[in-house]
Amino acid sequence: MISLMSAQLVLVALVSLQCGLNASAIDSTKLDNSLSSAPSVPKRRVLKNFAHISQAPPDTVHHTTGSQLELECLIIGKPAPIVEWLKNGEPIEEYEEATNEVILTDPESFAKIVSKLVVVAPTDGDRYTCAASAGFKRDSATTTVYTDGDEEDLLSLEKLLFKPIKPTITLHYSAVFQNIGTDLLLPCRVFSYAKTQVYWQYGDNNLVYETFGRIRVLPSGDLYISGLKWSDMGNYTCVAKNIYGKDTGSTFIYPVKPSK
Image 1 (spheres, rainbow, N blue to C red):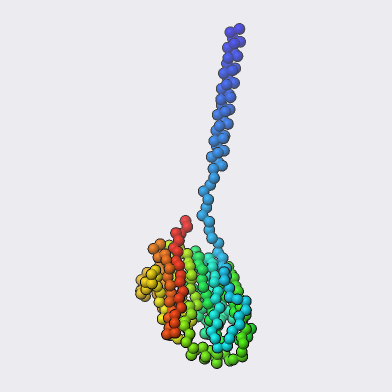
Image 2 (spheres, rainbow, N blue to C red):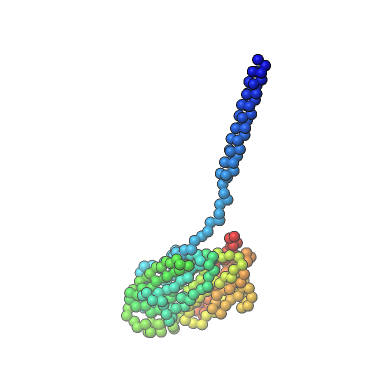
């Protein structure tokens, strides 16, 4: 009788022990599952390359012979976009080519650029195209110009040369985002019939005097900043001036911390 009771007690103890071990295994499994399902840290979002004309010139324009016509194109893109103007499908030459110079850009930059084309002596039905590119991305917009006369190109141009016309800034950034530590070039390209002075201001109309140094004005009129710093953030204005007036183009610089 004693041996039977002892056997029953041993069996109860073994069952209790097994239940405890099973419970421990279940808790351990729950713990492992909770650890494996923990959310991962989100990765920094990377902006892909793109080019987009945010404001195109009108589809058609009527031009009065002997007057100056300007077409404006606003483009945003990454990297900072490059703009080329075409006339009837061909790159513009001679008097209208000042806008078509290539600007060196940083591959990680993001910018909004303003490009203007001064149209000299168009003929009726000429088609002008603003062609933008950023990396391998493209966008374009075309304007057809209709004239109200048949005056010869040279005669029309001669009339413009003797008119009191202020300069036109044909290319500048309105805003640019670029990595700290990189070199930044702010374009300022000018079209003018008369001799023109180009200079830069920053902040509260402070002049950029240097032709040598970390921040300097190049002979082309562009502003060059070597080793961009956080303290360089702010508004920079290009001023083009001749005896008949002036034109300005402002750029806001935002230095960006490079992604790892």
